[in-house]
Length: 188
Image (cartoon, rainbow, N blue to C red; front, side, top):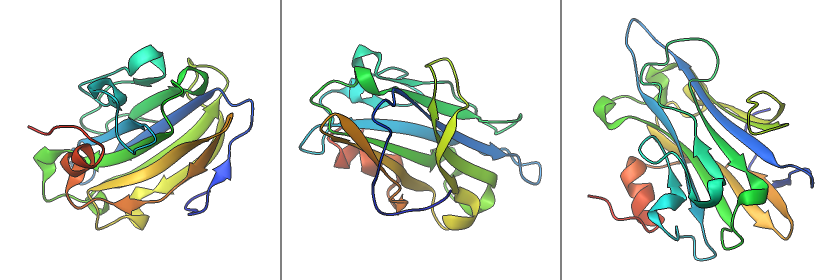
């Protein structure tokens, strides 16, 4: 499917969205990639620290978004990390969910170009226990974002009773700390 900059509407009955990040070991080097989600209000800010879901905070309030575990090497088949979004549980004050992918800070000189088969995929799934379903979007991070180490891969924006999907593929030079500050979190 790949990149598209305009927004497309999700099916009106969509309930569960699974964002997946996968990659492989390259030249016997293990890289740590991370997937994270920011739940934003109408001002483009998080309402609390729990609105930032990542490897150190596995659940948002009300169980709307959950983190599926931290793979630090990319070893193994299939998705290495995932975030499950339960659209019907997203609180009304949340207007946008931003999904980003980043290379761990311990690999400061690494970009997605250095990581074999780095891929972000968004699926509409039949239940919160399923990871496979209808592919809504897929991004080849190794090819399309070679010079980046952090990017906003996907945005889900509330539109009345439905959700709009966009893939901005916005490179973020300051990495995850820059995104945290942009979305209203204090960075230590």
